[in-house]
Length: 339
Image (cartoon, rainbow, N blue to C red):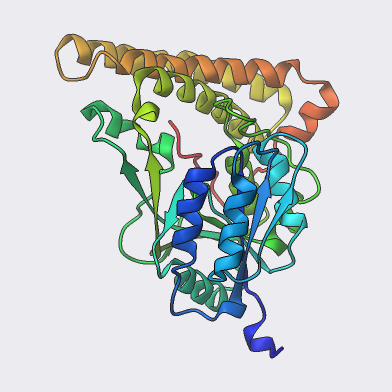
């Protein structure tokens, strides 16, 4: 095969009992146009699915619209081991982690391949993530779009300090250079547990190794948000998980000793009560929805839990975690996308 048409991007879809949405995701993937089939492929990482996932993948293989479509199984439950298995089971220079509830626009792959060819030294890139609500949610829900990985940095390509995990395209070389390919440190969603942080770790560690992160608006995808995920209970639970993720991210980028991180984290937890108090005042004055109080409080509680988890780790593991993704000299610490 001519080197000009060697596979550039491997789409990796990690899935757990989500066959119906996976079917829609693969249908959209089969509609990609303006890109050579030899430029890309798709790997489904079946994370112990007990539903119709195998049948869905076989159906799309028979249709033949997705090049090199295959399915492998990862026995260890969790998004982090599934992502790792996907990375280790492909050899393309770029890995596109696409969630099973995301629908790619028809020119997403063409835009991704074009950017990868033009910027071979980039560490990771991603595009617009448009939230596709099953039903228009309560107004206050829109303030928490970060929960659903919404991403829009404007109309032009540019370097950014952070990227959302939905539709994240990562350089294989960058994953190896930052050490994630050998030793991921943060667990992510396990089954139906509302835990996050794995994609945050990937992005922070890639950036810490000196690689640029890019926003590519021509790459647009729609992230399906069912009504149940806009409920108050769901937002409270997932913000608790995001608070834990924030604490772990703070530890990863910390530039100093573990003891100083603990002191700084304690101060941050105390400072978190200031915006919470302001929110309560805003609710009393009728400017904010009362539902926002438990959402914000759950995030702060999650952050406290995350700090506690780090402090209770074995000392050798804590030393590995703290500062592992500290920015390279001359680079600012990247935000995690959650406040």
